Image (cartoon, rainbow, N blue to C red; front, side, top):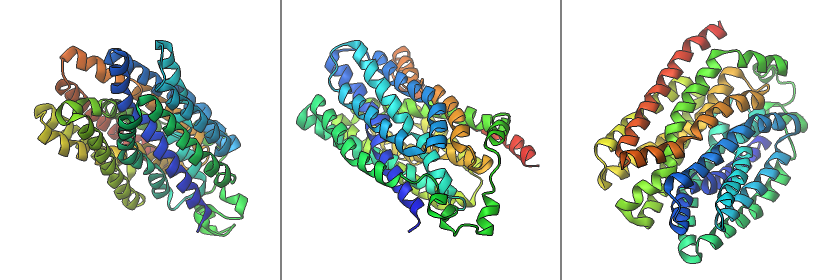
Length: 408
């Protein structure tokens, strides 16, 4: 088996823990911290925003560090920081500790987020560039599907403090040895291979992957509106998506109860898994920008539907459809950038674009929290989210012409 697929496997496991205990777990932390300390939802949601902002601030440095030193030291550091934050979030005694824990989690998430994992996989593949990134990030769906229900059950058995401690210890025990062993090789050239496992010097692979000067590739990309249209579209779209994910458990709990809400979040993760698998099968044969436009459009429709019919009967199918799409949206931004700008300096290029995406999407939790407080419910908030998805569609469409002109 080509060694690159082992790299994909490690990234898959990293995504399981990163999204299970970070992104999707945030919805559980939001409720448990609020109930346990009596802090307002908007206040706790602001700490989740700090989590995403910390991630955003770190991304340029993380992408550049992976390009320069390889992913192993970066991800090893991230595992420890994420574990420290997860363990700390269950043992809060003061408000400042809430923010400190989420800052640690944000640093860890940055090293194993879309940027970090995509930059780890990108040097290994050319023909299977989309499939490899999609399969690596499929772990995010498993994180929601398995991680959130397991976390909810563990909280019921052990209490919030012990459940988060054991979750952090489990992550360290699994990820540290895998990362240290498998990610010791940075690129296929270290094994005498080209991308996709072809023998060194294969003309087809060499032509497809002919490197440009890293500095010039980065500079040309950052001057292109095609890149910034991707950043703008995903920033607006993920603002609404991250807000929905963070408040999903809170929205569902009054309708379905705590256990039912936990399993719905897990089922949404399963739908995301199916979406990522469908994406992995199709993405190397389609234009990823156009594909993304279609997925954002579907998300806009289902958010409008739930805003109009906020019932348990509507919540379940809408969550599943939305989940099928969100699994793909989380994965698509690096695929679009990788397809349109190549692998050379990918970490640095996507690190900059990812910063813009994450900086905007970081306000999703507090954005939904403040609007829900103002409107007295989530129906109007979801309608605003649908408008964000429509704006994302327009941004991506506006960049399609710039992409064609750049290629010309």
